[in-house]
Length: 267
Image (cartoon, rainbow, N blue to C red; front, side, top):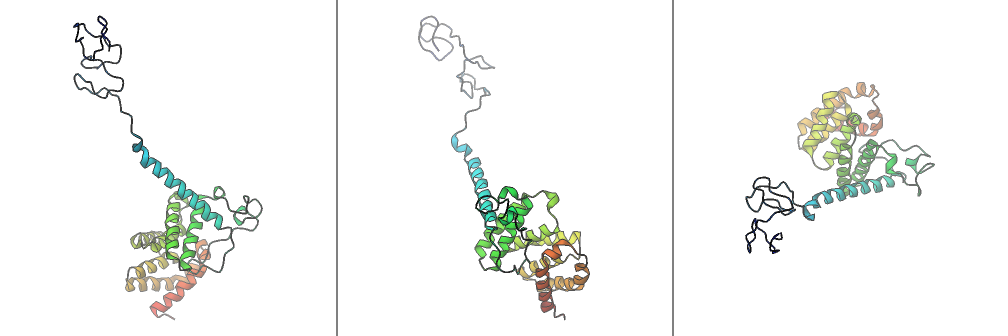
């Protein structure tokens, strides 16, 4: 600040050359009244906080930038995956029994209404449809013997299911999540999915299949046999219930029923 009497530049309350009181026209400390620099965080005279927040360095925003980039990369990966689903299937999916195919002539099938290039458009899929497609891809890679790619898509699928509205997460979705967790060797999480299914419907065939698989992965043959025994005891009555997931995973249930007879020695 400049002394109003002699014109010298000063920083204190009084001029060091003529003793005149220096009057500040800028912001002042609310406690002692001393003049403040506009970017001061504390008063230089009494140390009282000024209430001014210092500007954050650019590095403070890096975590947010990285999170945004990761989200974009995840969305792009899902988009490329879903586009790949326009290609026709080869063979059956032994582990899952397959998911419903897109109807011919729809955008999902690359026919009429499809985006340019005959590729499926992510924006045309619901969150649940996208999650189911990722689940299917993970299981297909597992059936094909590519464990690393299967785990990659399994991780994406689990994240995708996390974005599905809660009211759309039915017992079939919990079964999918259980298989995905098993694929990633998360046996405890897979067991939780099985318990949830069976708590809602104690004789649910897919819940029992998942329980048997969790027991097998955990090296618990007694629990595996128990789950398979119950599966065989309720197989006919449960199939008669006609649940959509039983039809969707029909081949899987057949495979697991045969496996159950082998493990338990049943005819």
